[in-house]
Structure formats: structure tokens, C-alpha cells
Image 1: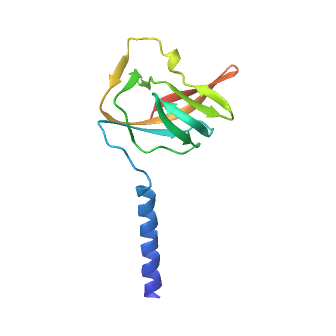
Image 2: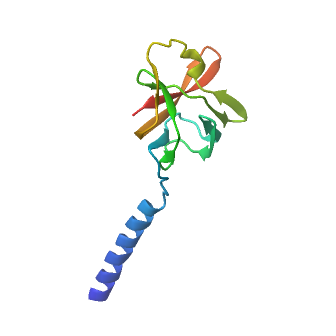
Image 3: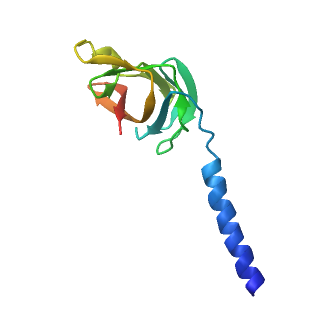
Length: 130
């Protein structure tokens, strides 16, 4: 009985470790993690020119290294696009044309949420800081 309890405890420990080790965070001065809260599975996701790949709704990437990342005030101001149900959806960065609060980050660690905004008959991806 003691052996069974010990083996069970070891299995729980190993499974918990495996879950954390599944994400290979990159190293660098600027690290960004993307979480998909769009309500859609995103295929062929690209953010700031970097191909991220598929990201299902509710899932998140590991921390990815970027050389720089643009912001407009508190909003990430980078291009993004993904395929949703065979349609390509672009990001909202084209709407950030006011230049007074624009800046570029080259260091730090950021969590960015990806949401979907429906406007009239079009949909857009929006990047938000968490």
C-alpha cells in the first residue's frame, strides 16, 4: 500500500513538472507572450512579422523574443493577422495613426491578449496588454 501511495505521488509530481516544462521560453531582452482570447481558433498567426503558427482559443504561446515591439500609449501597435474559418483577419494597428504616444520597447516582459473586434461587417484582431 505504501508503495502504491509513493508511486501515485511521484506520478502527480512528474505530470506537474511535465506541464511546466512543455513551454520552451526563449531568452532575450524583450519577451512577449500571446494569449488568444478571441473566441476563435487562429491559424497561421503572424505578429510583428513573426510567424507564430496556430493558436487555439484560450491557449497561449511561450515567451517569445523580439528585438523590438511598438506601442501606442498602453496598446501594442504591431501588425498581426491570422486565418479564421478560411478568412484572413488583420489587426487593428492601421487605426493607430495618432503619433503622440508612440514608442518602441526593446526590453521587458509583456503578456499580450489577442481579442477579436467585430465592426460592421468586418472583424479585426486587437492586441491588448494584460
